[in-house]
Every structure is written in structure tokens, then in C-alpha cells.
Image 1: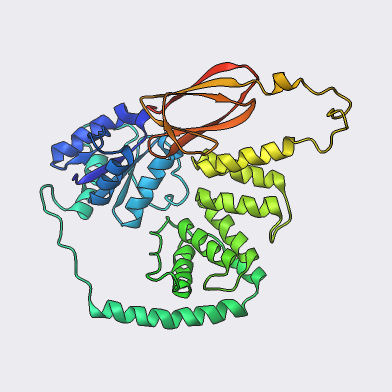
Image 2: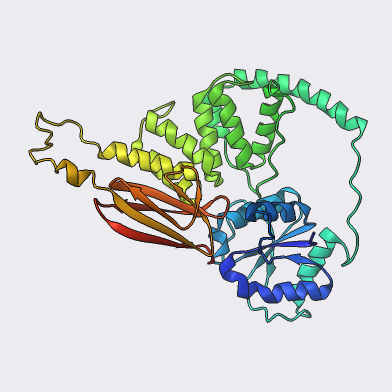
Length: 387
């Protein structure tokens, strides 16, 4: 496994090649060539390399700041305390990373003696050690750690009383995002019934800025597991997690607004939340957005002849005539239609006339597009994942 996991957008491949060479000249091994070995999936290879890496270097550019998978890789590095950012364009990093200082290689010419590059190498040495130095042995667990768990349960009981005494509105007002980067998510509870301890873990991590744990705590308040059921608090937590770019929370909050649960019913806001999740690559967001659009398009009433607003209905044969849609992906990829079970591209399918959300990716959805097919239409939609 490599010393350095280099996180970047594929479109920047030529830009970061000199950085790879410079790291290798210093003596570090770098994982950056994302070819897939036989017998393994793209996601499996990346996960293995990312978890084994001793340092994660994320390259922020105009392209990479908008790439979901780059942000996810950076979150993993930041959670483990081994993230080092590098700026190759004048951009603001995504939310959650703006407090982390990075090397400014804006006009770097690829020379290893460059002062800023050497400063970057110094940061790498602090994380990895000198090139060729073996990784440290993992520390064994100790008895004091087990004693801390006992204190943790006592604190959990105190938290439950405090949360029960405080009002929903006061808690909602104080649920503000904290400054700094996204910390590592709290661990899942050891036993499924131990939701009270889980609530304390999630709250502590959420207060430090973890969108993942804000969403988890929102789920507990939504279902009433381990804490009293409180949909207003759940909505506040989902909003906070959604603001932290956790797409699943945006979908959960969208359902609250669509159904009017604990908040005023607002289908327009629900649609925006679903689309935000869809734009972040979550297939469930695309599917919810499409369902809501379909519901909003349905006619309220029809007369005895099947006409609406005085117009004649289209002939049944014309309205039900199938369309043919061909979906191609380069260099390769999987295809989801309205979030259903993926199939390997190219795909050619028969569809009823209407709107469909087409998602493509390599193992997980990476980008989505809404298409509308007309009766009898034959069309091709092409997606390029090499950029």
C-alpha cells in the first residue's frame, strides 16, 4: 500500500502528474493511478488504498471542489488526522475544510527545490515520517479505556435528563454549526439497544461539526429510539447535516416539508432539497425529486369523457406508445433509472413516455440527469466519467 493517497478530480490528471513525480523523487510511494486490477471493483480498490494510506493529500482545484468523491476522500483523511490540502487553483475549499491550511502550489513549475513544495514535504514528514520509514505499530487497548466507557454511561443518563428538561425551540436555536472541519463520525453503538449512549456519542460529534452524526442523532429523535421522539429537533438536526453536505439528511428533511411533519408543508422547498441531494449524487434524492414532480403534474379532476380543462384527451395508442432510450458511458459505468437496480452500460431500454432520472457511476452514482422521452421517440444519452 502507498505512503500517500492522492485525492484529485480526473480532469486534473495532467496537472497533478508533476506532483506525483516530485513525491516519488522524495522517496514516498503514491497511489494515484486508478486502474482497476482484475477481480476487483473500482470502489473496493479505492477503499482499500484509502484506508491503508499513511497520508491523504487532497488537491483543491476549480474542478475538484465540486467532486463528491474527492470530498469524501478528504473527509476520511481529515477524520484520521492525516489530511494535507494542496491548492493548485485560487479556490475556496468546500465547507468543513476551510480552517485547514494547505500548500499554495498555484504557480508551481514542478521543481522539488521550490520553497512551498518543500514546506509541503515537511508537513508530509510530520504525518508519515522520513521516506522509507516503516509505519508505527498499533497501540493495544488498555483498562483505562474500558473505565471511560463506564463513565460514559453515567454521562449518557445525565444527558437524557438534560435533553428532556430543555425545550425544543431552545435546542433548535442552539443547534448551530461549529467552526472547523468535519471530524470523524462517532462509532456505531456496540449493542442495538444501547441507543442512549449512541445519542451522547452522536451529539458530541455533531457539536464538533460532524454532519454524519447530526443526521444519525436526527434519526434517533425521528424514531424515538434512546431519546424522546421529537420531530422538531429531528428537523433541526437534518437541516444542520444537510448544510454540511450530507445528502441523505437533505432527503429526510425534504420528506418533512413534503408531508408537513413538524414544519409547515412546503413542496417547493422539498423539491429543492431533493434536487440538492440528487446533485450530490444520491440516487434516492433523484428518485424523490422525480416522484414529487410527477405528483405535481397529475391533473386534479377529469370529466366523464376523460378530458381536462375542456381539451380532448390524446388517443390511447399515442399516449402509451413506447420510447427507446440508449444510455452509453465512457470509459465504463453502471446505470440507474429512477434509482432502480443498476445495470452495466451500454443500456437500451423501452420506456413509457415521461420523465426519468438517469444516474451513472462506477459502483455508486456519480452524476445524474433528468430526461423526458416522448411517445415513439428513439434517443441516446451519453455520459462521460473520464472528466
